[in-house]
Length: 461
Length: 131
Image (cartoon, rainbow over all chains, first blue to last red; front, side, top):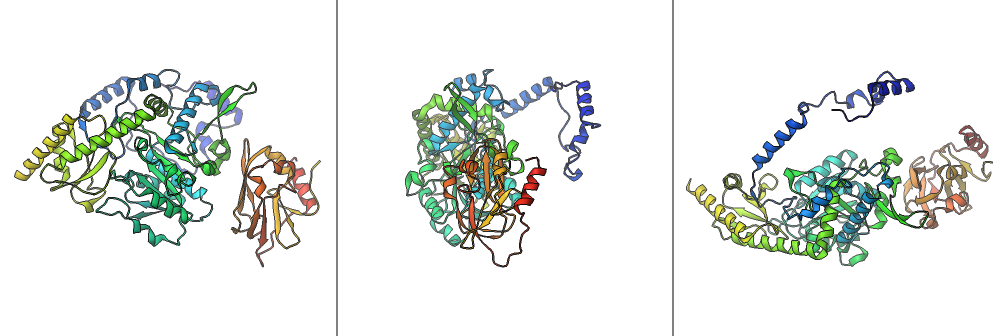
């Protein structure tokens, strides 16, 4: 079914009015080599009935496993009110509406979301969201290069403790614009960036340093020292943060020894933990906040509060001269939208939880993870990989390859963690495990018992 | 009536440039340009010490509905940017040729002379553009 409201007669009369033979001709200015004739690998469209059936079958295949995988997407409890409100007709849209100012309710919601994210990260301004955490990091790298007026460099320092998918996504988004990503090695004992790792870059022209906190291994980086090092050298700091963790950890706006005067310059992250279900990997949303001095280089939509001619409060899209529809090729980004529906859920989630509720979720997740790692490391052949504090994730080493063990666990309905072999082979057989407030002592006991059994079977085989 | 002072030179991209007594040059956008842009809300000026080639974008002027690059008429090193514009970008609207200057720079010695327009040539240009 076509949702385009124009009849064939409408289309023909419009084409005749501008003197064009067919719609294809409107795209003539795009060179032929940049056009895709077809989409290989994309099957024919399905009807609503067919797609409904396919999705139900796929969902059944997922089962209802007990999930101990984190690695960027986290299973948190979502209060029923979140999606009951987000799916109301007034909010149920993926888009910032066209003629945006006619939708004051949507704009107010986005404004309140921005206010909460700015507060959570202790930054001055927030945009109305980006696609996901990984692409938000890519956009932050591009933004940092534009914003760092003391540097002419396109080099970005990225520790290997930053999520491997984020690093790959940032390179895919920004690589063709000439940005160069230099990967910093991590300390295999501590699982974070060693203090001395940055010294070799002293005196070099670098645009920005990316710091993930907690890092991919769940470990806490020495963000104050890293932030101070960067700022002393006119290098901007891009923080990649977990929003739940911010209820307990120092927010990026206050990183560094100078406190609120000189924290991170840009903060980004994955918004999924704030009321968005795992959903087999998406859709999620990315958030981005920044210091006011960089706001004109920020990509995406920003909603502002103002007053109308009668002095009544109202909301409007603001700072639009950064955006593509006005600035064309020189826009800060080709992102002109936001993940409206998911941001609606996040705004409702944050409002329901409040600072105290979010802190309870964060503290419970931290406590469950400590219990989990405590139980798992009592299993013979399992050890903690890194020393030092974590938030709600930790790397554990096994005495034999992880993949077959994970398969055995999955057969028992347990997703036992992420196999680190693909991205960090130097660690040997290792798993990244996570527990949130959704896991009970009985769940943890069940996993530890199953892991002991699986390892024993593997040893016997 | 167009406002094109005779004490300076112009570019096709609507910048003006005038030589100061100390040999540096001052650069801004023309009255015609500010009028076309409308009320300015933000101006981004370069850092002192930045080296520019002729024709390189060095500043951005932003009005409510448009943002435009401003191009350096000559090659040189920036000696000063107008510090008043950060707080009061509308100075360009009210006094494009005076208090609304954007930057001063020391022209590169021996750089090839760029083809600047005389006031008469610039007046002709904006008349042709319908200004």
